[in-house]
Image 1 (cartoon, protein in one colour):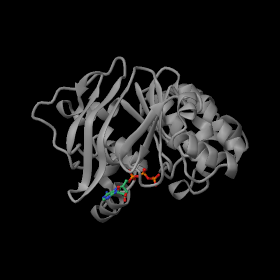
Image 2 (spheres, rainbow, N blue to C red):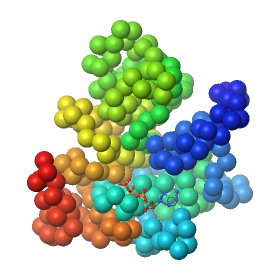
Image 3 (tube, rainbow, N blue to C red):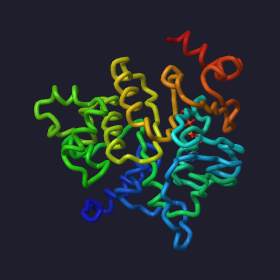
Length: 293
Ligand code: ATP
């Protein structure tokens, strides 16, 4: 209903603000139902993911033809595997996730979910399969309860409360004057980055999508917040395929697979121990982070 009453100039503002960031992909399409840049084939059927495998096959991408961003990307994530993407700033990590969400189409190659090309299915059904926990969740100026319920609008209060607990938000909420009915303030400004991420995790727990995409906050959180987020994420990722952009390598040592992206190419892939033993780019990044810890 909100989009019907939103003045056009405000819609334009929201659109521009959202377009730049992965953080807002879900809202951009689900809430405002804006026309996306990608075209849907006529009569595209819905996709119903059962396993949740993800495959990138020879995927290349550019925003502008004279500047390749992703170059011949190949990887496969099995159903229920937990995969992390690491790489320096500008390497193309967020772009990879934007392609999975079909925010843009690959310039070459294909992306498959459970073996189905994502270009052959309806956008709405594709996005319904993917839960996003962005770096900076945009919250509505309403209560925490309603903000979490956005994950599944018809969820009962009991389901919302259970998601809040599993997202490790209950201790924080217990300290608020009006508990779950506390208003979060204009654009969630009264919540810290870590608290906002846990609201996003609670939403995802309610939505229960087969595929989970997590964009770890770049700004460092205090270690208590980070631990709470990690615990909440483990809960949400347990029965799902997950793809996380990681900035702190300490958070991904137990990932099934780590993709190391460098200047638009996957230069290494393996688990933490394999990549350390390999002694390449990942091992260098690990040493660097150990020194700065
Ligand atoms: P970070 O860790 O800093 O978030 P990243 O690895 O996620 O970086 P991307 O956001 O995927 O990197 O960006 C890859 C490259 O694509 C960057 O050079 C960036 O400037 C460029 N880029 C990103 N979005 C656009 C866009 N909409 N139009 C043009 N270029 C873009």
